[in-house]
Length: 126
Image 1 (cartoon, helix red, strand yellow):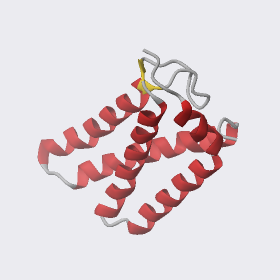
Image 2 (image 1 turned 90 degrees about the vertical axis):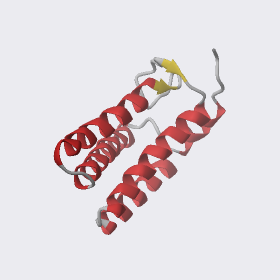
Image 3 (image 1 turned 45 degrees about the vertical axis):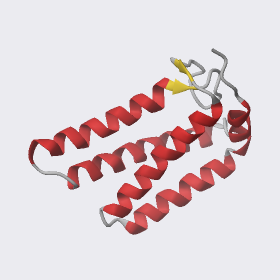
């Protein structure tokens, strides 16, 4: 189920939503040139972390792992980014949107239980 096309599409949309959420948070929490640094910099850093620290042969990704990461660490990275995105929406007053994002991410992970089990079983192979 975790690698089904519909679930992969939902995952992609959730990832984009998370990056947009933290970008909006960075924009609203700062002034002047710092707005641009936070609104652009935070999502770039998160996208970099998301794309580089991966588990080899992850069925929900390209399969490549620029920096090989144990499955549990990858899972923590994903949850951390989604939690930050959910909190950032809450922090700027978009409480209903924050709740919606949190619920949809939770449902996505429930639907992806097979990927989560696989991910948590992956050990570091360095």
